[in-house]
Structures are given as C-alpha cells and as structure tokens.
Image 1 (cartoon, rainbow, N blue to C red):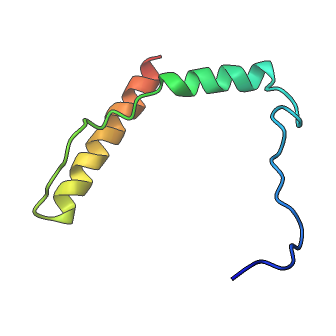
Image 2 (image 1 turned 120 degrees about the horizontal axis):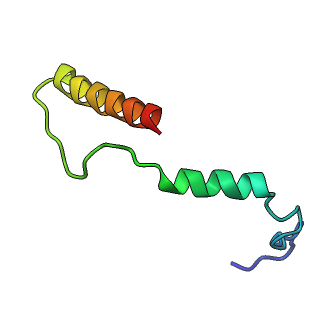
Length: 70
C-alpha cells in the first residue's frame, strides 16, 4: 500500500522559539528538583486499603512537617 496524498506536514517546533525560561521559572524548577516525596522506595503490600491509607497519610504528614520546618 502506498500513500498517494499527504495532507499537512508534521513540523518540529524549534527549541527556544517561545522564550527562554525566566529567572522565576528557573528558581521554581531548581526548588522542585530538591523536593522529596518522603515515600520510601520499594513495593508495599497491604492487607486492606485502610492500612495503605494510614501509611500514605503518615508520609504526607511527615512531608508537611518537613516543609514547615524550612
């Protein structure tokens, strides 16, 4: 099967056409790169959804406390 007709063309958007990042955007990106999720790495298996929710809520509380200390 051959393509007989092409409608439109795909073009790549040139890099940096919109605008380079502003200093505020760079600062935000660097700050976000330093954040941690406080969720330990690994595979977790729970017997119930409530156990999983309890761990998730504990990790979120630790994250909020760590953020408040900054």
